[in-house]
Structure formats: C-alpha cells, structure tokens
Image (tube, rainbow, N blue to C red; front, side, top):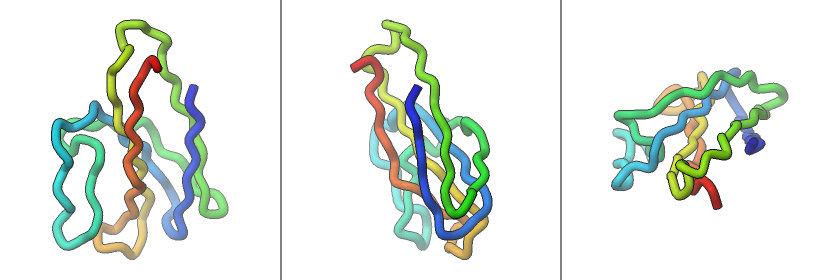
Length: 100
C-alpha cells in the first residue's frame, strides 16, 4: 500500500487518475501551463477524495504480483472546482515502477 497526500488552495474534491506510462510526453493543455501526465486517451479514476482544510489523503494498494515487476504506472491528481483556466488544478505526475 502506497500512502498518497496532497494539498490544494481551492476546490472541494480531488480525483486520483492513473494510467500506464504514456510513450511520449503529452502536450500542454490549450492556453495553460498544465499537462496531463497520465495518458489522456486511456486513464482510470481511482476515486474521489474530499479536501479537508485544503488537504486530501488516500492510499493505493498495489498487488504483490511478480508479473507486474517493471510495469510503469503514472498517477496524477485533479482538484476542483477552482478558478483556474481549466476549472480545476492538476498535480505533478508521479511515475511508479512496480516491483522494485
């Protein structure tokens, strides 16, 4: 289990997005300095997490399956609604290499 924690100055809820690592860096989102680090064409949402005093916490269970060794997964949070151009704030992406 991997504990995850984040902060946002605005918004009421955060969503954890995850995908396999994209083959190339996704482009910036139109008119913003933001980018999806998850694969925008193939990501899943792990769940919603309420922001309490500007923070959210969750845990991600990773199976101890040897077949997953070396598999790369990207995690990224989105928090909203905010007054940002996208209507939400994006976290930095986090690349996890499983099994090491």
